Length: 392
Ligand SMILES: Cc1ncc(COP(=O)(O)O)c(C=O)c1O
Image (tube, rainbow, N blue to C red; front, side):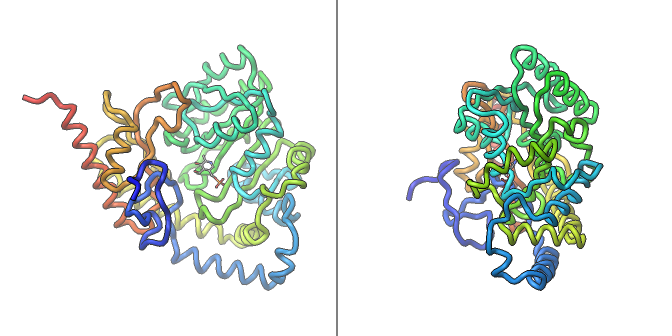
C-alpha cells in the first residue's frame, strides 16, 4: 500500500469518522463535533414537519433557485443574530455552501485580471478558486489582532484591490478573533478606498461572546457569508449570503440560473428554515458549543505546550519552536498515525509563514479518539523539542 502523505488519505467506514481505513486519525479536517443525542431528535422532528407541509416529490420537484421567500426570511432571521439588525430578505441568498457562494462571487464581483486581497495565511481553497478565475491574489500582513490595517491601507494606496476576503472571528488557521476597534479600522479603510468585503463568518456561531461582523459596520460594501458547515454539520450543505442590496444580490447570483451547482438542496434549505423558525437551530448550537468547550478543556490538559485557541473555536493552533518546520513536524505526526495541518499550507508559495500546526478538535466522533490523537501529537512534539535541546 502507498504510504500515507498529507494529501492521499483514504476515507471509508471505520468506527470513528475521523479514522481512515488506513488507520489515520484526521485532525486536519475541521468538522463540528457530532452531538447525536440532540441533533437526531431535533432534526427528525423538523423533517417530519417539513414533509407534513410538502410532499417529498413536491419538495424536490425543481431547483431552490435563490431560496424561497420563507428560506430568505428565515435566513435573514439567522443572519440577524450576528449582524444585529435584520437584513431585508431580498438581500439574502440561500446557497449550497460557502465554497459555492465564493465560486459565484469571485468571478461575479472581481473577474479575470482583477485583484483580491486575503490575509497572509488564509483558507487555502480561496487561493485556488481565485487562480481558476484569473484573479490575482495579494496577501495582507496579519498580527495578533488579525488583518494589519496599515498593510491593508498601503495596499489600497498602491492599487486598490476589488475585494478583501477575510475571517474576523476564529480566523482559519490562526484562531485570532479581531477586536472591535480593529474591525472598525478595517471597515473605515474599505469605505475610504471603496473595497468590497467578503466576510466568511462560518466559525462565529460557536463563539460564546461574538463581536459584530465587519459587514455590520459597512453593509453597503459587504458580502456576508454565514455557512452552517462548522456549527451544525458539514454534510448539511447550506450557506446564507447577505448581499449589500437586493439588486446586487440578483445581479451577482441570478445569472447563475443557468448554473445550478451553487443552489441549496431543497431538503437542506427547508430543514434549516424550519430549524430557525422553531428554535431547533439554537438547541443544536448550544449542544455543539458545550461539546467544543469540553474538547477544548481536554486539549489544554493534554498538550503541554502553549497553544492559541478559544473555548468556542473548532481548531487549535500550535506555534512551533524556532528552527522547526511545520511540514516536517506534520509529516512526523502523520507517521505516528495522526494527520494535522502545517502552517505552510495556508501561505502563498514562496513565503515562509510563522511555523505552526493546526488541529481540528471536532472531527473525531468520540472524545477518546481525540485524546489518543492529542497524546500522539504531544509525544512527537516533545521528541522534536528534545532534539533541539543542547545535549551534554
Ligand atoms: C474558512 C472556511 N470557510 C468555508 C469552509 C467550507 O464551508 P462550506 O462547506 O460551506 O463550503 C471552510 C471549511 O474548512 C472554512 O474553513
